[in-house]
Image (cartoon, rainbow, N blue to C red; front, top):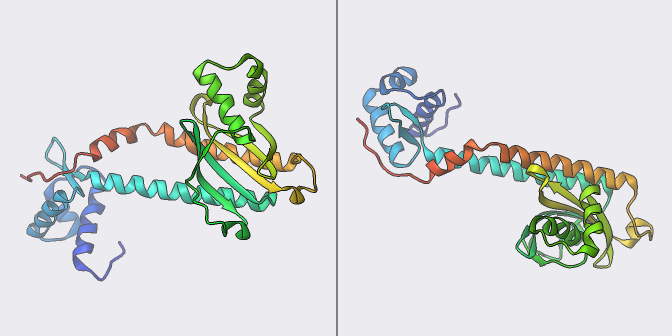
Length: 254
C-alpha cells in the first residue's frame, strides 16, 4: 500500500484497506494491519464518529456512510469528466461551434454541460443556465416527449411529434445559426436529455441542414450518453446506500 508522510493517515488507510474486504472484527484488523490493539481501537472509535467506519448488527466493523457518499461523489466527478470529454470529442469531430447537453426543468431547459470553440467562450455564459421553451429544435424535441407524457398532444402537432420521437432528432434555424437536436433516451425510452450541435451558417456552407456524417456522429454520441444514464439508473442498490448515508452519527464500540 502506498504510504504518505503522515503516519496517522497511513494507519487509518491500513484499517480501511482491511474493511474493504468485508465485515471484520477488531482482532482481524489488528492482525492484518500489524498495529497495536489500543491504536486500532482508538482510531476506529474516531473514524466511527466521522462516519468513516460503522458497526454492523453482528458487531463487526464495516465501511461507514461517509465513505459511501465520497464514493458516489467520485463516481459523479468521473461521469462529469467523461461527459465533457464526449462533448469535446463530438465538437472536434463535427467542427461545429458548440455542443450542449440540456435537461428539462418544468417549462424550462437547463444546459448542464457545454463545449464551445475558444472564441465563443468569451461570452461568459454559465453552462447551468435556464432557458424557456421556444420553437427552436431543442425545444421541439422536449415538447415532443412532453406532449406524450402528459397525454394532451395537440392533434395538429401529433404527426410532427411522433416523427421526432421516431427519428430521434430534428434540425432547424435558431439564434442566427443551424441547430441539430438529438434525443438522449433514458429508461423505457423516456427522454433524459437533449444533445444539441450549433454552427453559424458560414460553417455549414450556407446550407440549412447538417449532412449525414454530422447527424450520425451526433446520434452515436447520444447513444453513448444514453448508455451511461441507463447504467446509472440500473444501480438501484445505490439508493439504499444513499438512504443509509444520511444517518451519520457517533456510535459506541463494544
